[in-house]
Image (cartoon, rainbow, N blue to C red; front, side, top):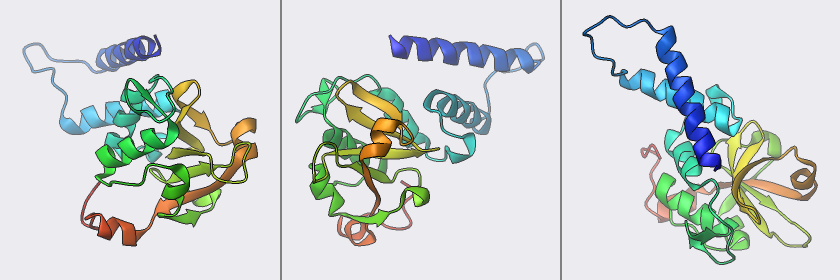
Amino acid sequence: MKKIILATALFFSVLAAQAQTKTVPNQPVDKAPDEQESLAKDYFSQIMGVALSATSNMKLFSFVYDWIGTPYRFGGGSKKGVDCSGFTKQLYSQVFNLDIKRNSRDIFSMVSPVSKDELKEGDLVFFKIHSRSISHIGIYLGNDRFAHASSKGVAISSLDDAYYSRYFYKGGRVLEAFKTELGFTSDDKN
């Protein structure tokens, strides 16, 4: 249902953008790639609550959008059902071409800790929810928003939300040593 509402919102925002742009008859209505990317960035920034300027990795936002609403399933790793670390593993594999570990605590061993105010798009956020050890993980999107698989399914939440603020442990950025070991080079764009 959410995706239908989001698709409807996108449809009307595109119509509004076209209405504002006067077209000359008999000219192609196709948008230039830069203009299409700009519209997509604007759409994702509105839907996900992230500033347009922070939306630099369209592959990341497209992946998250496609998974929103996927039901939660402990140990799951597909669109039939996924848990927080399964979602993170899928995202890092498909968006960044990195094969990370499967468990949130093990993934934490692959990162360099980052404070909340230093988080960047694509960084990981770790939580200790009702536990002394890391029990939840998500992917930072910007503007204190993160994507994760919660008990309600894949969703976007805020680090400022009282619940997540209470249990936030640390942010993390995948260590360069692991990126190199996994075949990811600094020349790669994703």
